[in-house]
Length: 329
Image (tube, rainbow, N blue to C red; front, side):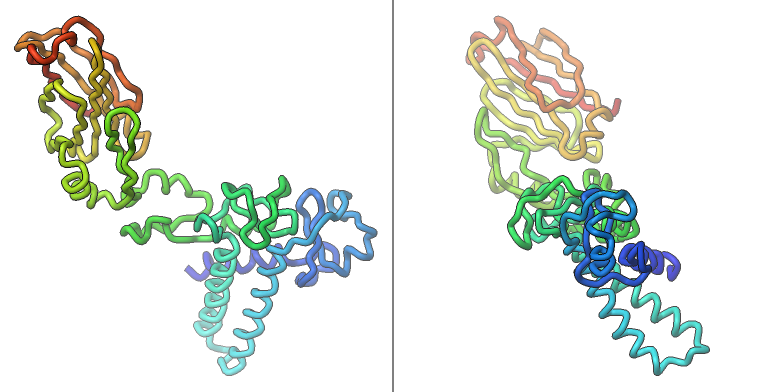
């Protein structure tokens, strides 16, 4: 536990060490066009030429300056308090180092968290024109409102690989701790809130967004005409435009039916991760007045499937049903 915590501190200290004078850099930290950093004092002696890549210096690394300043203040404060600790007490020394490591982690996390979209930045991390680190998705810097550039903050990228942070869906119950290289968890997290998948006929989408366990309650209050099933085998009657939600096989499936002149459009999709789509197979049997007309086998898909034929010319006088059977592939 201690060793893992210390990696963050050591990596951060390595990144704020000037590659020329080997001193810890403080403001100003100068950035070359290829993302290398150097202290302000050494940059003046090198005539605007990076000692690593020979590229020109073009801006300050304000993001790294903020990190370096906070780490320097942190270490001074904690080490000053350490004077009262016995130098022979190994446990106390470990506690002090671990405290520094944890605080360094918080400093880095604060710098990497976008104040606009509330998400953590991960590789690649870009600069704005003034030298602040910027989120991948947001085009405008939240600190100075300047546009982001193509320049990369390699120092923060290297430090961020050791950063641990809570799942974005912690407030919904997830206790998973992520690193910057485990972002795939966010797309498959079982606590990820749902956007209501119910589509009212052709154009209108519901704006509800909330926890999975509240979805059924939302349906009962906001989509009273929606049919609910808790078994993977059931029958839908093709009379009107309608929606059905199926809670079965440990997943949520949504069926939408759109009836037009002489055609029925049908769509069945699985809610959640796209990886779940290939797990299931759905058999649809079209039945007209008790007789099987056609059978269609398909995987869940966001695309509309069109059943065309004379059987749909007069849905008022005929009993047309869709027998649905969902199973794991």
